[in-house]
Structure formats: structure tokens, C-alpha cells
Length: 186
Image (cartoon, rainbow, N blue to C red):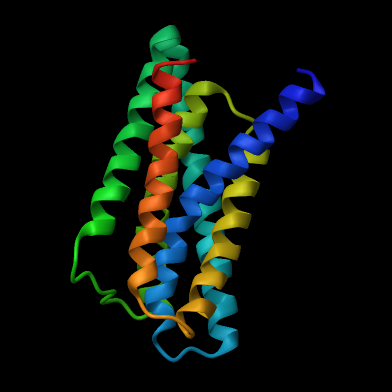
């Protein structure tokens, strides 16, 4: 693999990581409306980042197993998964009345982290099918989700909740576009 291909893969994975982290950002905006100390904000971001490392790693491992068994058909499976994930994120961004019922502390934080990082498992599954660089992918997913969680929590203190749904819709649109690109290369 040449340097150009490596840079292209890192840029693509970074865009996917940002799209995936938009979910954590939008939920962080809502949670940022709750009075949180800076230490709590820091801790929440770290936990979300760790779960965005673990879940795609599990997905990548399973994706590689699927890829070994389905070979050429695997790219269609991965593209379809990204399409479904993107559509789900877009639809959920337009649902009104969703409030976080779980407090971002203790066991509630673990439940919150699992909920936010479930979509990263599906994306990891797709990346495993395509044979993406595991270490680079999971690092970028964890890093960007942590940063975007912090940004959402801190920004949530300053702005109203209307921005949250737009952030999730943007993230879903980016994943949808990658799914379409994988199904119909151009």
C-alpha cells in the first residue's frame, strides 16, 4: 500500500469516526443541559471514548470472520450495514421528545456509553469485512467520539437542544453516503 492510499484510508476513517461521533456529540448536547462539573465532563468523554474503542473492535473481528466466509459478497453486506445505520441515525434525529432518562454517573454512565456506541459495532463490522486497519480505525473512533462528547457536553451548557438532532442527522447522512459509495463505486 502506497502513502497516498494510506492517507486516503486515514482520511476516510477520520470522516467515518467524526460521523459516528456525531451521535455522542448530539447526546452530549442534551446531557450538557444538566449541571455537570468539568471533572464529570472529562470522565464521561473518557468512558464514551473507551466504548467507541471496544465496540468497533468487536465488530471488526466479527466482520473479518464474515469476510472470510462470504468473500466478494462481503462488500455488499458492509455497504448495506452502513446504509441501514445511516438511515437509522437520520430517522432517530427527527423523532421528537427523546430525552435521556439515564443519569451520566455510575451504572447509568455505562448504559449511556453502550447505547451511544452500539452503532460503532455495526460500523466496525463493515470495516472488518473490508479489511480496514484495525488499530487506526479503533483509535480514530475512540479519539473522535471522546472529543465530540466533550464538545457536546461543554457546548450543551451554552446552547439550546435544537442543534442535537441536526448533528445526528449530519452523521447519519455521512454514513449513508459511504454505504452508497460501497454499494455503487464510482
